Structures are given as C-alpha cells and as structure tokens.
Length: 160
Image (cartoon, rainbow, N blue to C red; front, side, top):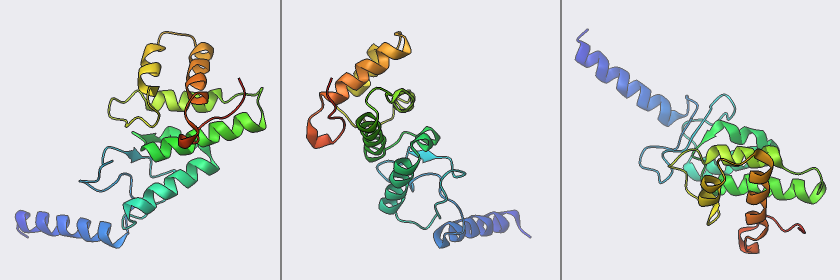
C-alpha cells in the first residue's frame, strides 16, 4: 500500500475515532479558548465527542467530588479553579481550625504555569510574591486574599 495513502487513511481513521467518541479526551479541541488546558485521561473518563462546555462541567463536578483530582489538570480554566476555591470554602466552613492547606497547595502548583488564566484578581501576583516563603505563611496570605475577595466570586466568607 502506498505510504501516502496509508498515512491519509490513518489520519482519517483517527479523526473519525475522535468524532465518534471512541477515544478519551485529555484536552479541549484545537481552537478552543482553553486549548492549553489538559487533564490526565486516567482520572477523567470523557469521550472525545463530548462538547467543551460539558467537558468543563464534568471536570468541575469531579473537582467538587474529589478535590485532589485538580492536581491532574494543567492550566485549569477559571471555572475549574472556582470549583477548587468552593471546596476550600466548604472545608473552612465545616472545619475552621483544620484549614485547607492541601487544597491551597494544589492551587499554588497550578499557577506554576505561565498560561493559566487567573480566576481571582491578584492571585498570580500573590503566588509569585510569596514563592520564597514557608508553606504556612504562604497559604495564610493566599487565604487572606480569598477571604477579602468580593462575594460575587463566591470564594471564601469565613471570619478571620
């Protein structure tokens, strides 16, 4: 078989497979505003034919059920970040003394990427400005920012 023909056929079969949903998606389709967002398909079973809005909804639901899966998303969308922020909020509301250090560390790690879209104004700068601090003061500074965030973002409303 001609190698050009087999290459074309293979490309066509891969495209058909993706369109039909036979593959597991690990990113938004090319050209999507959040095309740099990737996730580990082993943790999120999303067929390749699922629409982007539904993909994002499913990823946010997964974060809401098991916040630790946030670690398996690169360049999470602002909506995904807000899902994690809501989990931080819930944890602080249920156990004010227990804290949410592990979840804040997931957020800090996500901001290692220069391509992440900031979900809370000032968060990127604060994470960058505190990068040389110890973990507890750094987490505390980020929580202070989140506590001071307007309620419209629906992040944190615990007493200081």
